[in-house]
Image 1 (tube, helix red, strand yellow):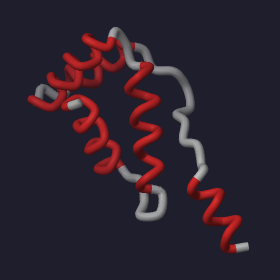
Image 2 (cartoon, helix red, strand yellow):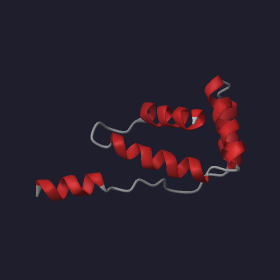
Image 3 (cartoon, helix red, strand yellow):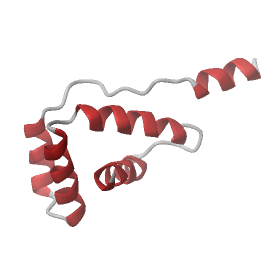
Image 4 (cartoon, helix red, strand yellow):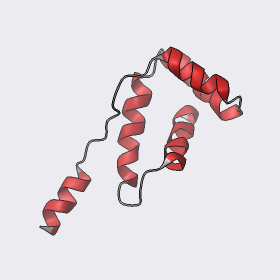
Length: 84
């Protein structure tokens, strides 16, 4: 049972329910006028959308399953994405 549980945790897929558009992201980031939000918006414009962001963040969040996923963890992942 332990090996099965470990395997399932190691191979879990994280996805986001619902679709988010570039316009929605712009609105969220516009309300928070920070260096980080401007950097993320710039990265998304360079990437021509949010698809790569969603896949990358979901994949990176897998590393935090055992310790927990919360808003701070997601915010850190968004910042790391914008700096990549």
